[in-house]
Length: 398
Image (tube, rainbow, N blue to C red; front, side):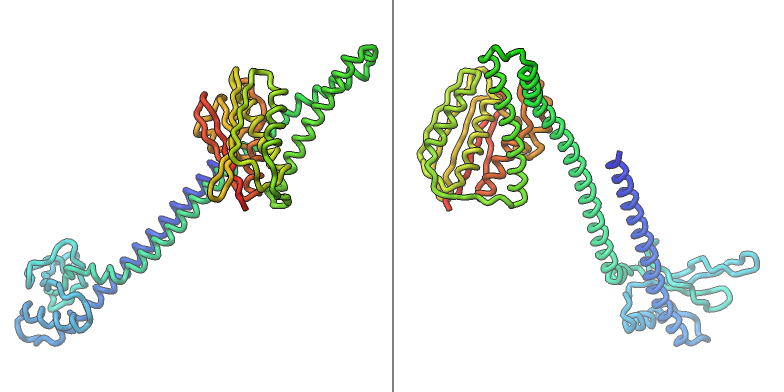
């Protein structure tokens, strides 16, 4: 509703500006045409004063004198001299009938000067057949300025509507994100509360194995929540450029082997992870790069099919070391790929994925993106729906 109100106000403002510009341009056009006609009419009056009043009026002679005067005045000389004869209306003479012309070039598009009386019944006037070069010369700056103002105003309206749309989308994504985060935090909190309740009740005091199981559940879920909070804090620091990376030469092979073993231990489906490390030394912050790779592996496991196959490899380029994590999971659409690294991007499609058995609200991939940006690199994704996803880390060499 608010967006529609802003759009309506913007459209009304645009129409108002257009109308004001149109009125101003029409008034200016009339003022300029009036000025041109008055200047040309003044030359006609001056030419009549130079004509012998006792002689029969010769349009050709008068036209020659008008032509000379127009040239001196710098006005267009393509004119037609018209003689008009008046008719009586309510006791007054109305000069409205053209009886002769010195040439036949006048038309309905000609600009007419005010008639100048010769005697009681007759008058003469000029028809300016081509006043448009003069009009264009005098009005073109106005039209140009008006076009610039109109274009600038249109740009402002477009940017305003785009900003409103983006803000509403961000607000909607934040709401989705909040819902997704609360939903995913609810499960470990429920497990912690349930475990604490059973331990506190004393029902499992004489069952040490079950008691140990509940202690383990509480610890694991608490660590999960702590990791989530730490990830949020780290992302906030990365976004605000407040996190200092400790980059040094690290040996990546044992790190990846450890992550692979952890993924296999936690997997509830058949899993196969292959590695091909052509480059084993990287210049990076070990803690944050390890967490980034772990997120990609967890993501591959989370969005997998019945059998999990993951490929991890590294190779060298001129400026970067590339690390790729490829899976055979559910993949992504082009639309999802465009928002997958946004902090609120996964939240926008969270409900659909949750119904399909997948949880999570996308902080992992945003974390990966932020970590790679902090390293001066980037992360890219290539994916095809229901076939695969492939994430590539670009790690700078310097």
